[in-house]
Image 1: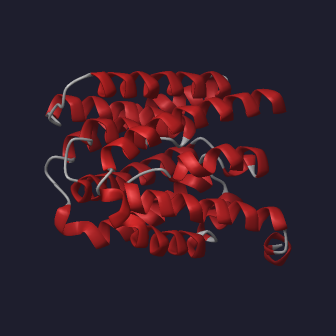
Image 2: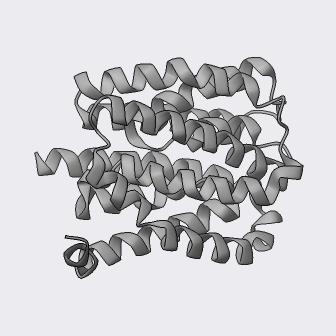
Image 3: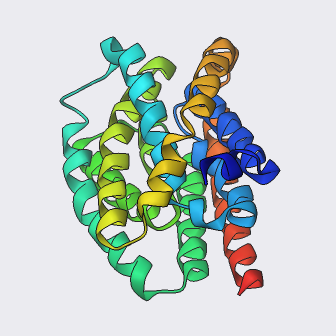
Length: 247
């Protein structure tokens, strides 16, 4: 079974997409699901969101270990708490609502956040904003695996390395929470667990390449961040349309 899987060209293409997503996330703090999900939903639809989230967990562990001195541990506790009800809501809706409708809703939420950020003034990452971002991230991450933009938009005015560190630490927790919820609702069976663990080489490759381009992103971090958030909304739309077409 394993040999048959590894001999499938589609499997290798999907792993390459995950490696590319891991490169982007290591350089920017998020972006794995944004890069991987729109293509994987066409090639390996069963991998979205569980296998993508599993890869994100492994990558976030690597990035958190590397950036641990820059993590603002206390500040991230509140969004970690509010992430729980967001995850529960997302898992509940994942079983009851059409996936395409959920993805379009996520796209609208992210684009609204980008618009407010682009036309508004700089704002601090207050506890209220972080708490709401954690709630929104729980919902968007669990339903579509795109959980980075809500947190990234709130943290966007900090130092680039601090943003990466805080997001990586947050994603360790949030990915573990989402995978637990997928397991409980039957969306992360043993076959998907194996598929997720087999992505470790792709994750490691993305981690190495992402570190190499990290310094290039520092001088243009906020525009790139807002661009990634906008692209994530487009990815959600593409996923919705692809899912609708497949149905």
